[in-house]
Length: 370
Image 1: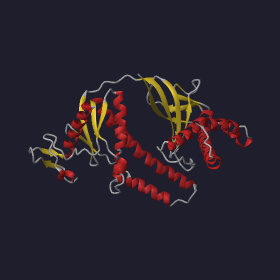
Image 2: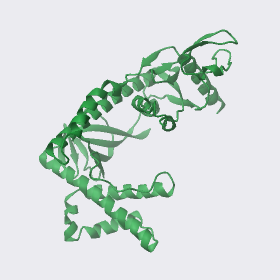
Image 3: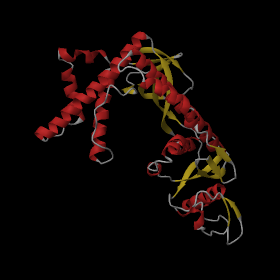
Image 4: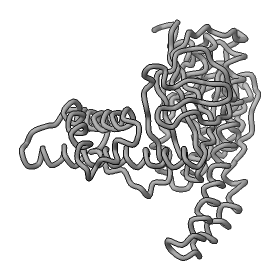
């Protein structure tokens, strides 16, 4: 089965390559903002809508002017992809999936651009990656793949690191899994509890590094605006944020990979995390635990291992329902009640284990009906 998959590698461009990447980032940002203004003014003044093909033609004309001749120095495909991104932003707005497109800011310290692979312009050569206009760039190739590279996204993080993400079309063969069934109930104290009675503690990564982050942020607040020392301190703060994100991502990857390898079916609850974040007392903890990212990883990894992720309705009372007799005990709405005894059958329950078993049973029931 042919499918597309992403591979992200860190790259180490030299000084000349770094300068060209930064100029390409600036050029793509300029093209996006320039034609955002063109499309906005065309509608406001003439009540006509400009298409992607029209902007692509105008970009070619724009390069002929001496004032904008510097646009010829960077990858032309990257500029075209910036126009495609702009058109996609407008399409999302027209279909009410997003707000009106906004201008890209130079002050946004994370920047990226995408370029297409034409005539094998993007390829792996030894321990380097060939990129259009940039040439061979030293890379840390941590994974191997066998497929056709469709496009590449070059990004610069807030701390000044450079990465390339390759979109590869390759043949996917489903990997074997353990064939078991499992239900998962996520939480804040325990990251998750499963239907087998096992639990994984929440690492609380942000809490662990919050003192270091606060210390670096206080130092940043004392620096003079636009000074070199402020820029150096900004990078230090960005590195702490990246460390938090990297530790969290590593934890989620290890956990999700283990689950999809061991299980054929994984049942989870469909959570409305965005709504839950409105609780200002729990918003920070919910953001740190990253349930949405964990569920996303489970879904795409389960496909690679020939498994499936089933979701039950948000409002299903999994914690309140006895998994033995089905009695619903509404007293259990109180989150402080961690263990309870069913008044109907006398079964003693652990709140989270009972919820996980109910989630698995409900998911299997719904899947069999569907």
